Amino acid sequence: MVTISMTGDTRVQNSMLHMAARTQDMRPAFSAVYKEMLAMFSDTFQSEGGRKGMARWAPLSPQYRKWKSIRYPGMGILTRSGMLRSSIASRGAGHRKILAPTFMIVGTSNRYAGYHQSGVVGRLPSRPFIRPSAEDIRIWTRLVMEFIRGRFGVR
Image (cartoon, rainbow, N blue to C red):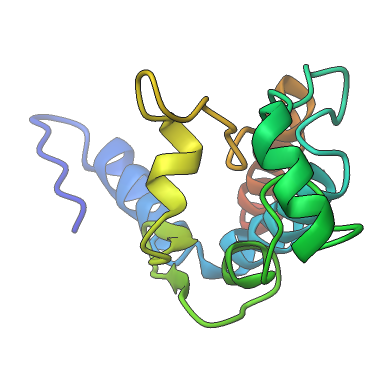
């Protein structure tokens, strides 16, 4: 809820309240941002973290790489069963999406996601799959600003 309190000119107060009312439901903008996020997550897994000039994820340890190549041939880093990837990048089991009027939440409830995202000291390197680039943030900001400008008839 937006509360504006002002003494004096009611025209300014009315104008501010009008602007606040026009931007109280941001779900259309969040929906556009969400689509971009899904593409980002997918690209991040496809490039093993090395998208848009970012460093790739840490390589697998030699021992684990050998084990994985025998049991899961051709599967990339952070991909064994595909559950983690689908839970964040393609609305699979564990995918979390809330697009509310004033906020959005996108993520995964996959039980081992946090270990991969942040790493485990001495055991598992951090391989962040939720890692927006500066360009991603600019795109998301542009989408939100276009929505807001559209609400006010400004292009």
